[in-house]
Length: 183
Image (cartoon, rainbow, N blue to C red):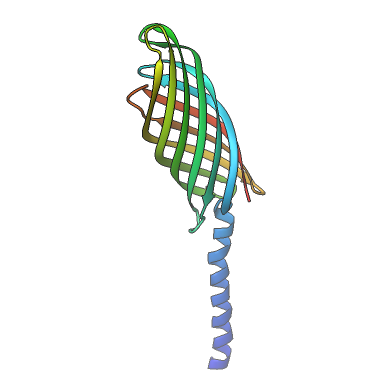
């Protein structure tokens, strides 16, 4: 085989190999870019305050999508949970918790489906009211969680489980169903 015939064949194989590397990346990763969204869910207090309540959440972040099948991102969130009829120290009480969260997100994607984990810190404020326990508390503590997502055309539905790990009010476990839109 002559050199004139081999070079075009090698060039075509090189282009095919490059397309094979790029195509899985475009198919496999979640949408790359800025995203905004929100969700609602259930919060369960464990420890010093024991009960369940609804919460709502606003999120914003950026997904870098650097590698095939791997999503890497950063996320900011605001969460508001109101436990109105809980129990603390054996007495009826209420708890209002607001937190601002900053987390890193690492996910595994297979097209529109994906799994992810997140970890970071939450700056929170809590207002406790009840017999013998009234007062405001605050702190900065770890927050971490796992989730699953399904995305199509920039719109992604998410289901996640997170824990705000505090000593002062106990652990808050949150299950959130939400939607984010990637720009």
